[in-house]
Image 1 (cartoon, rainbow, N blue to C red):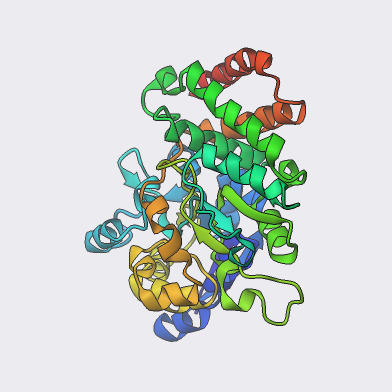
Image 2: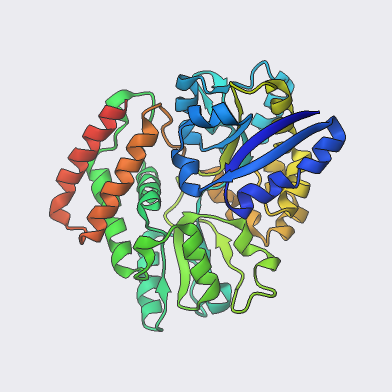
Length: 386
């Protein structure tokens, strides 16, 4: 029997729906698939070459598409699966998930999971007569009103999520980081100054834990405590919206996810399934990947097992949406208008630099007079990444 080894990210959303596919695929094709998991940080940082030497299937982040193309660590899907399969997945993409893995004319991964930055709230604690914010000024007004009730707006503002929110804000302001245009892909200084100004205000008004939170820690806190009522921007997790999020877990509340504040341009996340160039069975690996990413599996067992599918049919399926606690219908418009990060080979290293530097600036008080120097440092780093 052929055995394939896969590496995914260590969270129920990333692990459970893939593990749930193993028995059916063994029965269908006589192929064994064994999944292992790596930390969320390693998901963004681990070298593809090292992973490709050990595994047949790799779950990757879309900013690594350029690195995948340059390194030769993974194989493009063209020639491994039929053109009709790729055309169907492209046409049914959840937002820009499918094209986010298309780089230099090739498809380097298939979208197995779709996500973007969205808003989240505790509907059971929501103040009467107050609408969900659509603009940043409405977010700040809500934060002021909640503080009067002893409650907070919260954000995921650890370094990784600070960088992601910076990218979202630039896109919402109409001046995103862009690929394929060299140094001209760096936003204007005034755009970054406005984005940093919004981040500084958020850091000032949000719950004190925000600068140390990633989305998982934020949503864990929101589900277990009653002091954070709303988050305007953070990668969504369907797991927290589901009925099983609360029963049997004392003090755990279901969270409601909705469209991000600030308009279109929220940053795309999610994950893609890539085929190692070092594996002994690339066609079998690609065939399995195409099935796991298909409408058949994604809107059924993948969603039921806790997944956040990358196939648009699942996001439009009423039964799947009910399983996911209304997560898909609540955030689909934001996903449809999500922005894609640059994907050139040097981008992953630069985005870590950007997150660390902006986070340090926020922790240091976010002084306005430092913005010009901060922008200059980041411009140099961006140009170095090209």
